[in-house]
Image 1 (cartoon, rainbow, N blue to C red):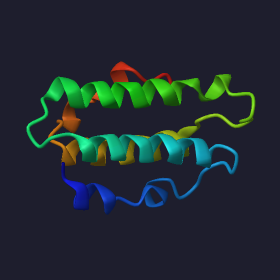
Image 2: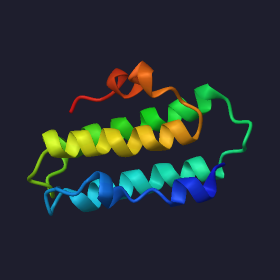
Image 3: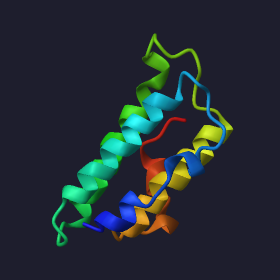
Image 4: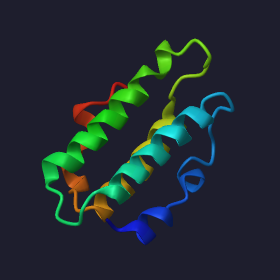
Length: 107
């Protein structure tokens, strides 16, 4: 699904400022979601796509429980994550205006 467009998204562009200890965790989650979206069939339904986004956001919610990471998701990271996630969502046909990420995120 939209492989070329999804692979063209530069997550570091969305997160130009990010804590050094936090960046690998965030990039891992964003890259994982991208790969899962690419593997979806073109006719995947909205529920399936949304469940992938929900899983990713819920994983990101656990950053504060990770003892290896001292930093938290602050304003810069929050805005960058939302930017990257909504870019991917738009490419796969989700409506950003519904603010669907807000249903699951605690950052």
